[in-house]
Length: 145
View (cartoon, one colour):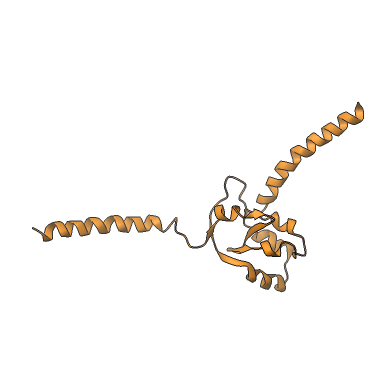
């Protein structure tokens, strides 16, 4: 009778393990997820996703020929399209390798627009537009008063 329970234990132990590994492989994707990339989206801490890879471009912010601000507009989204649209030189692509962190594991942002083009820039516009409208309304009121 001792071999019978042991066999039952082995079968029960192996079944959940197989199911667990199938489910656990999803969260344990190699690479960096978008939710982690989003945590690094400021001037003094910036990670960018370009061509399925994540780069820490913080040290390059001051040296970027287009200015650091333009790189900030690709924060928290897939910046591949932005990078390609500009037409970066082979030298720029070579320079990028220096800032490589890890592969991009995919994922969607935290409710901000996570499309290939326009995600990061939209959030800035969403903040500045209402301020601009209020400022213009205030200016118009002062000029007509």
